[in-house]
Image (cartoon, rainbow, N blue to C red):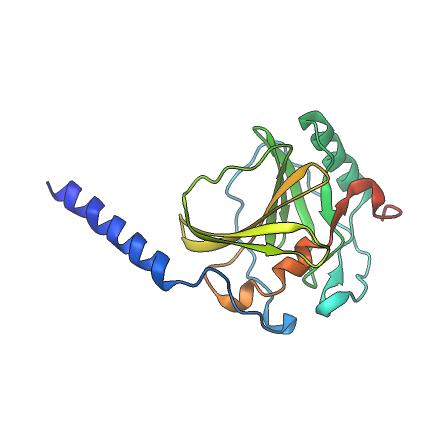
Length: 202
């Protein structure tokens, strides 16, 4: 009996939070939006770790160029080819963003950065938790995208879904429900480019 009452209470809280929390966060200045990096990854499979010492260049909206090593590019490309799609990597992101590791999780390629996670696949990516709300948006490069407000372990968080050139991407920041931590995420998503079109390797 008490279990049933507890489940009903949790469902009621979920429904109320869905109504109260807005579907899109307000934009703020990029200088305020550096997300807190997650201390430990949630999932592991095939791990590729590398780093680069190249100094990032200044980019749009206060973003910085993300540097990748030859080893990182090769590892990402090999995993994506195995899964049957072409990998996308962000050219610009928050200052200090680095690719920490890439690994295959089922039919998905997980790209774990120092302050965000990008999951890529050749088919739409299903969420482990139902979305509390969603809203359709358009990235600055004209690509349609969708914000999802998802309630899961650690509290509610936003995920941005988009598809470009046959590759589906789910982008999320390592932070809780804090408006300043998600500003300009659409700008970062618009910087995702096919791996082979990003110029010379670092």
